[in-house]
Picture (tube, rainbow, N blue to C red):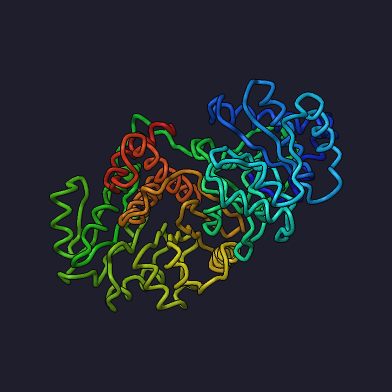
Length: 503
């Protein structure tokens, strides 16, 4: 799914209006109906709803939603925030439609005192239709007072298209006057700002509503930002031929583990085999390879001559894909192993965890990365590699720059993990949940991607499919388990079901 700027969305709207053809007021009605249907499923018919409307097109959506809800017997009122004298053309039409039929349900707000006088309790469900995606500077005056009043008094807030005050295409880190929505119902596409961790208080959840914008216009618009969905990755799945054998699905080498960090290696190894690799060899220290025999007899092992950490590697060219990093430590001998891999191995490579920390201590080695090497940092590991950025937008720009500079693939882990490719494109993940915020999650992700690489997927497809299925398995877990209680071993056990659903 493409992610567009506010200006591009405006152009798609205009193309739809001109070429469907459809009047702009009717397109607004279509959007309002989509929101109304969703709200009707979210709230009881006897719930009290307050719809805060601005005087632009977002407010027009709000007036239409109020009318549609009232026609269906819901208990709602529309509060018009008079921060300016004039309505937009379509907002005025919908204001008048609401006024003609349900005039007693409209309240005009000219001051903060009006709000305090007319709102008698805080049990209302709020619908935020104050401002849309055209905002590019902090709001002030009566609008600011209204936003602050809503945030201070209500905790059930549904925003229409975007939380009022949030910049759709830029960082809002220095902008404090933004609606703290509970849920955002957004039209046709997610907005880039929804995917930034810094906006977690404004967009904790969002849903994309299809309002029938022109497919031709959508296809014609260029973007470098994408939102990865189940439908996208399902098309990647490679079926197994009944005449296949283990040699057809590749041999993966995993360099992982050291004294006291065997768990990282075992997690990664199990996830690798659960993701389709025909063969897996784990190269590690003695205690880790001993543990592997007990916990994962399906894998093979190579015991390092050093009993505490990895100090060498033999014939890496024999493997279809190599993963390095989980739990390996930062010993000098281990660092040299990674350096030799970068200099001489030309196959598929994924680097994570301590492998990334070794690179951050030896940044010139980045020049040796084989083409399409996959690097999977969490935010702190990325900061060690790339330096500190002021905000999330700058972090994404830096991610894109490094992927292009080093002809590699960066997967920046987070709530909406972002994958940057050397062609400048960035894909944000739609799967996963907070149950993954535990030790071992990254080790499992490395194993999943390694298994897919060995299995025969290209690096771009392996990283996108691996990222999605990792989160998807966690989503399956929380259908029956608390997010607090899920272990990464639970997630790995759900990989078969996750892959089956994608198939």
